[in-house]
Image (cartoon, rainbow, N blue to C red; front, side, top):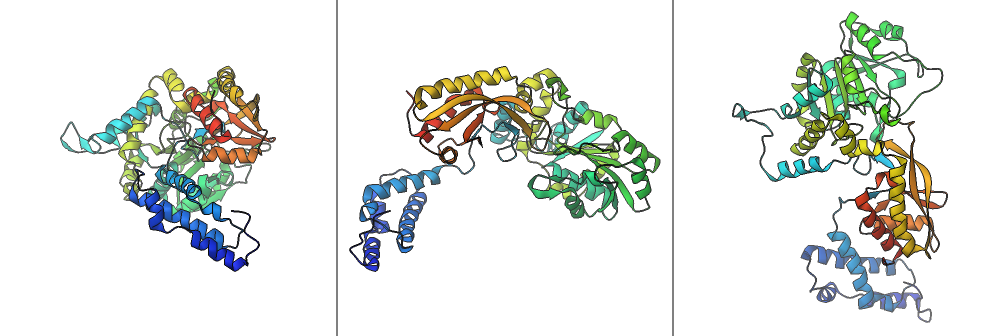
Length: 477
């Protein structure tokens, strides 16, 4: 509202504006034809009227015409539309971050999604053993697959890797000491830190070495009658470079064997395949870690594995049996949807070449710049026909990221469509794209809004263009 009548005393003008606000019943009579849940309609009406009343009482200048029927109906329609739109919704990821922790992490391939629909809409053998006709274990549905793919003797799955670490430590080291290198005391997503997870497990942290250098003798010197476990944490979300040294997993396993102590590795972003074929930096694979003789390894299902959010625990049969029997396990167990998605992903890995091309996370990591350039070209041709007078459009070289706390130093050469709006600030465009029917998330660099096309699927390009036209308030020609 603007342009309050200055010929009247301020208090009188405010009272006149307040009297002009329609009653709830009157407003409801204007929208009685709308087909929507009554609770949503009434809620939207009350919110509109409350917002107008608050605006007037704040002393802001206002006009009677801003309280007219059409103006209020327009505001009502916007609020009702927001109420009818799901809170949990899809967006277009133009950031170039493949495993985006704020936008759903790894995408699942169509066959995994089909399996989710199947087990979600029908009864299933979640905990029913079809061979015996008795109660079964949900872990058995994927345990054999995990063991075949990795060489582990046994395994189970919980709801994320932090839970996996917590459960393993609680089982193996509650009330006793866990030795870990100072340089591996990492902070994972959401400000959760390894020392804090360890504290919650009831284990006692015993730091050894320096931030940048740790030697076998550091572990050896810290072992005592209270030691329960030797822990190695793979620093998948940061790197220390320069004058550094760390104890290798084989060295730690040898040390554990001599002192009859189990060895655990928290891989964080565990991978089942070697991704160096794509020019990516070397990451230890789960089969390699198992082969090195580790007693237990934990890793995420939704990062380099490319599956649903889950925490996988693999290792020696006797160790895993103890972890399974921990009462905490029930509180951390996964549901049927996670199991369905995970099983589908694991089965794809039995044909490694197909897994690399079908699992979206892996396919996007291995995508060539030529493919990304073609995607950028498709979008630009749509935009230039419509936005020529409103926005500069160009393809520029950029770098994508794997994301999800994995491969922190790995730059993936990519291409982005750079938008330079002519009639609004780039920050306003960014805001509008978050508010359109299908939100678009990108990044701002050098006064341009960038859409990295590595993370935009071919089938999303028409939808992306439509969202951009909506933000610029134009129609496609």
